[in-house]
Image (tube, rainbow, N blue to C red; front, side):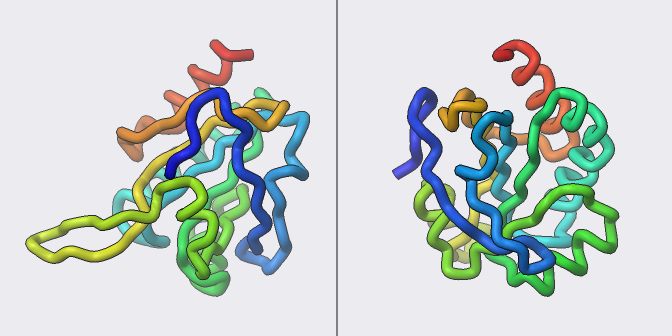
Length: 155
């Protein structure tokens, strides 16, 4: 079940593209964009990651940490991060514990095929660890700007 706005964001620990562990609780005191995406190096996911990369100076200026999460392995995250020079952590949830905790692991349909996959959803988390906004309908190219506009409004 997906957490709701106003609730404490479920804590977790996952490795990034370099194998370094990140716990959400380590980011208390900062705003966090926790964004879930289906797969490294696919068209929509690449557009979203690169838009966040291009807006990263604004995220940094507004003291917003960015954590991308997918079920891809660390090695694949590393290649994706290096290929597109992504300046934020890509967390590997190979065991699908966090995608399930956040309610973004679900049945999907594509071209008549039914399979399990990750929804493109994001959570804006405030410095106290509470979910301020949930993004469920995301346009990869404009998501970064939308998050930055919302963060300024909530601060």
